[in-house]
Length: 461
Image 1: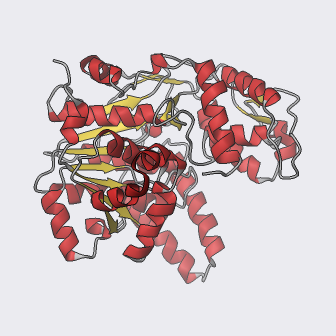
Image 2: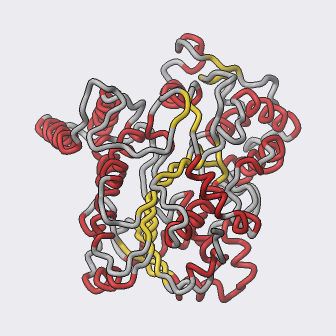
Image 3: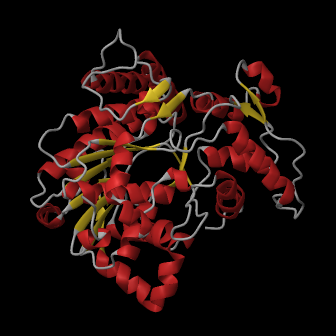
């Protein structure tokens, strides 16, 4: 069977989105509002002290962004009215029970009305404080699920995870769920309640020592890495996202989808090519190289960098929800990736980056072009090869990036391929999520790197 009209499914639907101020959340909102302006309502959960500040945050961090340029141009002075009619700002926090929604009337309305939940809220810092990452990435997933169980009209819950929940696994990485207590080291067993208790104990110790906030930050960051490494994960982010998945995947009787994107980059085509939000992940390396700050980095030239444009991730999310609602694809997990179908290695990315910046140098604050003389050098062994970076923030970044720039895994996406098979018409009608349709040289030279230059390096949002 073939999927029908994708936008039609969302007409009259009420959707709850967590993480609406994040990169993926913004692009999801833009797409839904553009292709189906007749959705009934968007509940957007925002961390804030009050509704006024939450509304301001959404205005400046989401709807005022260049991402919404096409819709602002199309609707003109009616854009603000359109947003206010569709969007309900919800002050809350995924780390709290019932998502921290204190307004009883609003909570009651949400539970009665919500048809779809898209849970994309997360802290994506690799070395986040263990207590913060656990509260957001692990218990946040549990709290969203608990809320979803009470939604009377729920049709779909989509949980955004990461393809790197399987750490530094080599070879073909399948789309299979974790079982509760699973670790990446066969000899150990993971107890989420114990991890929470260890966090409480560590914070109590620090409080008893009257540690200042800077010390608490440092200790809790290191503690997260230690606990992650103990169970086989390279960092706190992947560890806490994996635990969140365990809680989600083991929840029965919910219409559930888990998507695992790889390294999410700028838009490919929609709403226009090259929009990107912040200097993280691969953007960080390109930004630093173009500014002449990063001349060498950790990595292996042959490493397949699994990058995927953000609009393809959003399209896969939307199509998966419709396919699940029609029982055309009932898989639980989808690796949204490019490494199997259209791989590109680290060396090719750096070749294109060098080529781009030699032709289009970054102009510094003094109005002078930063001339790039060499392709970035890659090293894979000791920190001694990074002498200019010893003892700096760059040394920390290099160690955090190492698991991904020397990665030896390839992500199987058979479930996503099945989805593409039933969504051929949808792909042709503006919901493309097939990485084989990416010409990497064109994307890097004419879309992605210019996007980083425009939106991140020049800080023009």
